[in-house]
Length: 106
Image 1 (cartoon, one colour):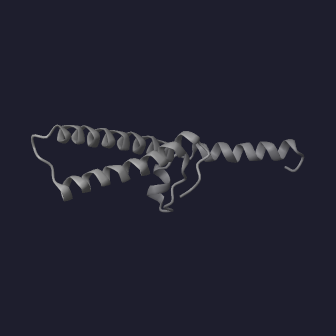
Image 2 (cartoon, rainbow, N blue to C red; image 1 turned 180 degrees about the horizontal axis):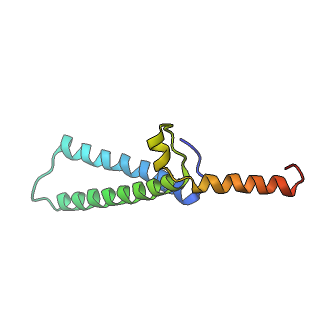
Image 3 (cartoon, rainbow, N blue to C red; image 1 turned 90 degrees about the vertical axis):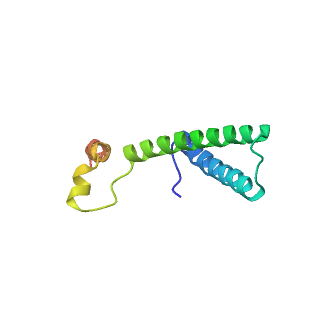
């Protein structure tokens, strides 16, 4: 996994991994041990599972939004390249050119 310079995205990646593991453990335990339908615990387990799924979806959305804004397209076909957002990379290129001119290397 790539290290994130944005600490908020790094936190979401860690939470996503943790919450997925916890959800898997809960669902596995629920099916291997079974639950009594009238048990109060069943309702609490369902609430916990719903909350974990909500947190997972929230982290996935935050990470996907970040990746969409910052990552370069990996495919090199014309269709993929034309659909990508290059504004971030164009700004980086312009910044480098401006920096080279001001340092006398242009």
